[in-house]
Image 1 (tube, one colour):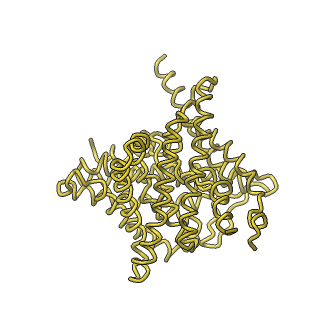
Image 2 (cartoon, chains in turn yellow, blue):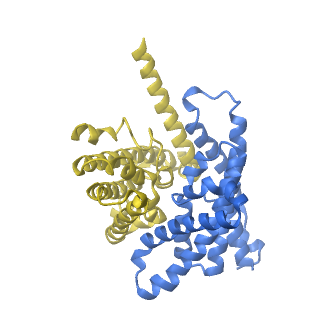
Image 3 (cartoon, one colour):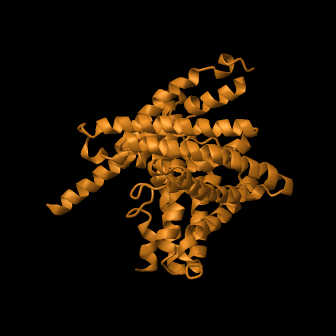
Length: 209
Length: 199
């Protein structure tokens, strides 16, 4: 176990969204545009890093029978911080993400890392694990939202908070609005995971022969 | 009365928690292999979401707002819900062992169901009164139950279908849910307010 391997495992090998299939609700609900995806990813990463470090520090103090409520209080404190910070500095993004910011509390990724990793490992490793898993989540969200933003609106990188309309790749009349509606979230994510599965299988087959 | 009906049918059909609001996906995918277990989970969610709506509404209006502690809402709600689920579990175990047997294993799972915290926060942001909040909770949970039972029925049939190897399991479940979501989009055309005479 090294700092570096803990940091990089979340990106691809144990990617929380595509490999472990955690935290699906915010993934589908907020991946409408790249700016939303990155915003949600950074918010979740902040909470994940904070809660991992604190839980790791307190791992010998918290009695094991009431550990889950203790983790939830730690996580909820960081979520409240993120909520207030975002409301102050990026109000439009805060409005778009809306209910999904307080809902970071029940994002399974964060509780899962606290329980499975931070409660058993040192502060430094937990920090690396939090950053890695957070970036993996951000990466997955950004990829999914790039596909949905492009197919659904025909633009890329629109950032309403800075008044930037985004780069228009093709005309709005060609865009498939269904992709940014709820069904598009389910189907795009399903196909993307299917594609990654098929790539992994092909790689394995190639390695065997 | 009309407004209550608008909230109820809106919650069940138009703004279905799973299929259009993306709340509660984890249990939706995880506990939907059989119709029977899906029904059990649905019942447990209806119960907890109804009670949680009322209790969190009271916590917000009688404790947090008078004391000016609005920023503690997230922490307070999640603790209330976690405690409530424990309490409900103990009460059911004592009062109705039959019901406990049916719901037992699903109850602890509900704490991390984002639909419960979601409905509690929505009740506050939509500025519902106590009755509307309770109806909204029950409606949201009924919509959840409707979706998960239908979905489980489809999945039971899908076990026999020839699905491409890479799409088996989770990806196919998501795509199926997407198709169901398209069907539910059809309800958006309902003009509930005119139907129930609320202007």
